Length: 250
Image 1 (cartoon, one colour):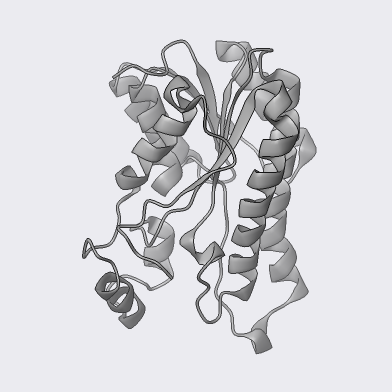
Image 2 (cartoon, rainbow, N blue to C red; image 1 turned 45 degrees about the vertical axis):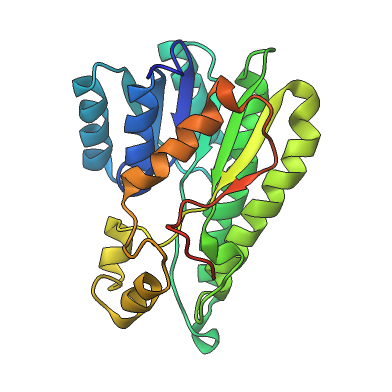
């Protein structure tokens, strides 16, 4: 299926996990992909190599999505390599679960700068580079945006903000034929969650028990929703939220 032939996509936070899977999926659907990463250069290169092995085209661009200059450079390099982008997937995100008593100003700003400000900066830059025919912005949220867990007040708040930014930008950018949608994954087996100790723990068992399809998601489970929203098949869809979560509702 080559529903994205001739299109150029930018994926933030694409060195591993869901972002890397999305980059591979977009490339498999025919898009040329610019992969953004903040620090994991080795992971970004693994992803670009995986795209090349699929017969696709990809470059890796280091940058902090919370820094306007880095975001501008990301779009410049993508445009120079492949032409004007028309797909932006805002996947870059941070999380840390703290009890209220342990919350710090530093951690608040760290998560909000990447998870929320980063989306606004990349979307603003997209306006300067997307073609007149429009494009698609896909923001990666989380089921935590509507069903917060204990000790997730900062993270859940950032993802609730992502959902509202999506709805607002869908209305604002519709006249430019730029569609803006949210994909909100459920519990997904990524390096980040494993390093946080979720794998095999009581919380994971509880979430799996509440998931009708009875398992933890994989990064590749998230990809079809993103590819669909990026494609012309979703031309009449904007401001929507798709939750690939195995039926889990929180």
